[in-house]
Amino acid sequence: MYATFDDSLITGNEMIDEQHRELIDKINKLLKSCEESSGQLSAIKMLEYLSDYTEFHLGEEEKLQEEIDYPGLKAHQQKHEELRQTVRDLHLMLQEQEGPSEEFVKKVEEKVINWLYYHIKTFDRSIAEFIFMREQPERL
Image (cartoon, rainbow, N blue to C red; front, side, top):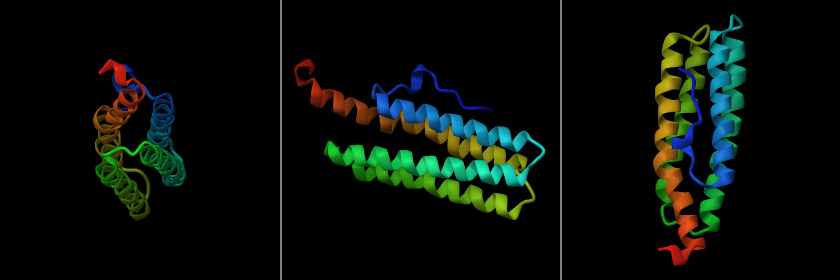
């Protein structure tokens, strides 16, 4: 199962939405590398690529939340730590196995894609709504 960025994932914040598109692209590249015969090496490389971008994206989101004094920052950081831990767990799986297994792919689907969809639709959308309310108080 590949990830897709559709209208249900739009937060309304251009920076966040563009980074989510890029994150989904990197997840799909990881899944594609799991299908290729190069196996473990390719998957490790793509997982590192995903890991680096994930760190960048989560850092940007957290920086944005600090700048706007977002009241849910601590809870959001805790949710981000869940994804960071999942990526660390995936690294361990690849190191312990001779290549990306069906179990590895299933974990990417369940713990990365499904987590990301839920996180965007709830936590990240609330940031965009908070920004909108601050910038458009007359609309309340």
